[in-house]
Picture (cartoon, rainbow, N blue to C red):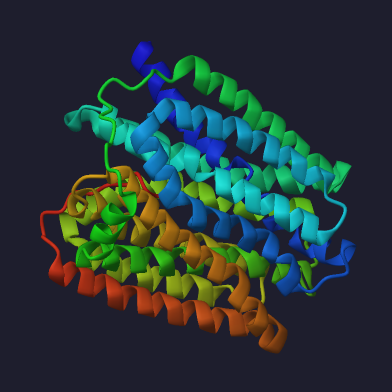
Length: 395
C-alpha cells in the first residue's frame, strides 16, 4: 500500500504540473473574439507560459539540488495553483499573458524536480514504475486541463475554467504534501558556481544534440495543437470550445504509446524508431488537411503519437550523457524544449495570417524533417547502449 501511495503521488505531481498549463489552447478562438485580437496575439497566452518554463527551469534545478526535492515540489505546486486561479482576474489580454508567464515560471518546480526525485529515490531495477507513473500523470494532466477548460468555458465562461483548475491543483498539492515521502538519497549540491556546471553541460555534444531535438519536438506539438483550433473553429467545421477541448482526447494515446515506445526502441533501435516517429508525425499533420473532421482527428492522433515517440527516443540520452548536477541537466533540457514550444506558439501565427492552416502545416513538416536530421546525428555520436528514459516527457 505504501509503494502504491508513493507511485500515485508521483503521478499526481505530473498531473498538477500540466493540468493548468495549456488551459487557453481550446479556447483561443473565443479569446480572440472577446479581446478583439489576432491569432498571433492570443497565441501569446501559450507562448508566455512556455517562455516562463524555458527561463526558470535551470534556476529551479539548481535550487532543488541545494534545498531538496519534496520541499521544492510542494511549494511550487501550491504557488502554481494560486497563479492558475489568478488568471481568472485578468480583464485584458496583456494581464492574462502576464499571469500565464508566472504559471510557466512556477511549473518546472513541479515536473523537472519530480524527474530528479525519481532518479534519486527509485531503485534502478524498478525505476520504470516511477517513470511510467510520472509520464501517465503528465499526459492525463495535459489532457484534463484542455478538456475541462473547453467544457467549463462553454457553460460558465473562461474565467471559471481557470478557477476550477486552480482549485484542482491546490487539492493535488495537499495530497503531495501528505503522500510524497521526504527524499532519503538526496545529496545536497555544494557547487558554488552553478553556471560553471551549466557551461559544462553545454559543452557536452551529446546533451546539445538532445536539447536541439527537444526544441524541435515541442515546436511541432505546440504549433499543431495551437493553430489547429483556429482551423477547426472556422468553416466548414465551426467547432465550439467544448468540442475543441474534446479534440485533445488524442493526447491520451501518449499514456499507451510511451511505455510501448521504450520496448520498440530497445527492439528495433533508435534510428528506426526515430525515422518511423517523424514519418508518422509528418504524415499525421498532412492528413489534417483533409476535408472531413474524422480525417483531422485521425491526423492529430497520428501526429501526437509520432511526437511522443520521437521525444522518448531523444530524451533517453540525458541520463547517460549528464555527469553530475542531473537536475540542472534536466533543467537545461527543459529550457531548450520549452523555447521550442514558445517558438511553436508564436512563429506559425505569421504564416497563419499569410496562408492559413496549410502554411502552418508546411512549417511543421519542415521542422520535423529537421528534427530527424539532428536526431540521426545524435545517434551517430552517442553510445548505442544508452538507456531508455521516458521521465523527461512533458506534454
